Amino acid sequence: MEKFKRKLFYLGGFDPRGVRFYHQMYREQAENYARLSGERVEVSARRSGPASSALWTVTNHSAGVETDYEFLRWEDLVGKVWIRNPLALAWRSIATYSAHARHMQFLRMRKLRQGPVITILYPPLLAVLIPLALALIPTLLLSLLLPFWASALIGIAISALLSGRLLNKLIVPWLLRFMYYNHSVAADGPGAEMDERLDQFAARIVEEMDGPYDEVIFASHSNGTIYAMSVLRRILELRGTLPDNFTVLTLGQVVPVIALRKDARWYHADLKALDDKPFRLVDFSAPPDGAAYYDVHPIRLVSDRCAARVDLLSPRFHLFYDPENYHSGWSNKYEAHFDYLRVGDRLSPVDYVSLTAGRRTIDEAIAAFRTIP
Image (cartoon, rainbow, N blue to C red; front, side):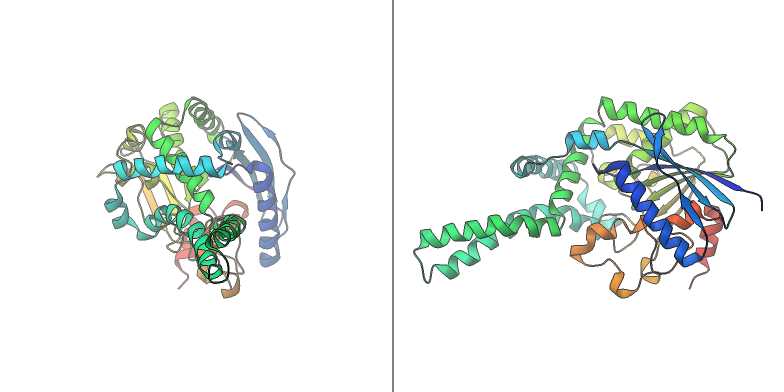
């Protein structure tokens, strides 16, 4: 069997955990894929790569596939802006939502999808209501037996003990950090360090694009889908045209978080620069994922024309997970947002490992996926 060679670039989201976490996650999901498919898949140890990247090799011995996986690193920059102090996070969240009220096109966002609007708005509400309720309810109940000042102190102590755990379970702090970061980026741009990193990513992809590969994929997830558009603009500026075997893959797309900010003119320019460029874009975003935008065309957020070939698809996770393992509901929102990188209880032609370790090209995988009733 002639070997099928694939080059994969992966740009992750706003997550300080970085390459070690994602390499281990890929290994675990590749084991699940191998168990379900019967194929023998080997994931190498990770090693340092050029231009702020890490490398590992995925070898599907059964299908004759070798994937050169390149993880584009920016977790060090995430770590610099990751707010750990809850009081600082609360203060900056006030500035964030004040700016959103002035600049975010909420009515247009709501017409796209209602879920992300709820996801954007519920963190500040819960951050206030949950600690208040956890303090007030015990205070009122204990005041029937104790002096009010004593019951109030106990209520405050109970709130301090429990509210953080409950807010973390509902991923409120993570969402507040996510919103603050993207508010800052919308208003002021990525910053000098991130701009330099995006330049490096684009140059690295261009360097490998004409290599001995049957398929080249530039994949991004979550917040990485925002920056993927900026990297794509840089790629096109560096080389003008793209090879037919190159695909931009976005997973859990969140482009409107920046694109619908009226003050994000730098990002509007990045998207507008793509509207007359031919390229291949495939997006998988799930309707139940309140942190992603299903069926939203990123280029058409700023332009009426688009020369790219675009597929906007739902991964239909419910078909591939048993009900007890399907990530749904408020407490599972964070996990649901990572299902794009997982293998379910049954293989999908378009789950992440099938796309990156399987024999099918993306177009072939989508064709197979479309046949599923």
